[in-house]
Length: 139
Image 1 (cartoon, rainbow, N blue to C red):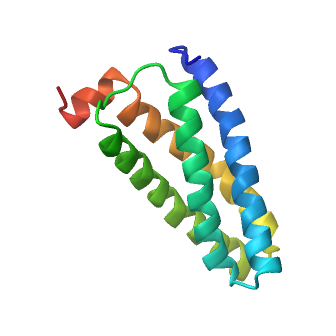
Image 2 (image 1 turned 180 degrees about the horizontal axis):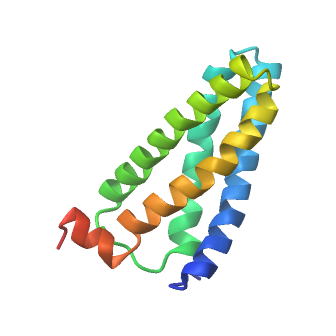
């Protein structure tokens, strides 16, 4: 059951984000340590798996208003915001891991916290609010 209360949406988004993060983090670990992929390649694949988890739960459980009726367009914009988050994620991973000397998993934890606010704000404004419909000039 979705909600229109922004505080409840954020709390649910954090919970959904937590689950998506578990999918992302576990995939990152398995792909890097288990499969042997470079951590940035693993991070990209893992992030996309987390994105899909996040989208499905957002539309089913968090947001009651949908600015876009066309689900393909909605997912595309949701995904583009995710790709922007992915680019920011990988930049932060690179900076924290290569320049600051953090372990790649610690870098991922810091990056995920920052990206949580970035993604929630953009998605809520553009996809799940009246303002988003007006900004995107959709009927």
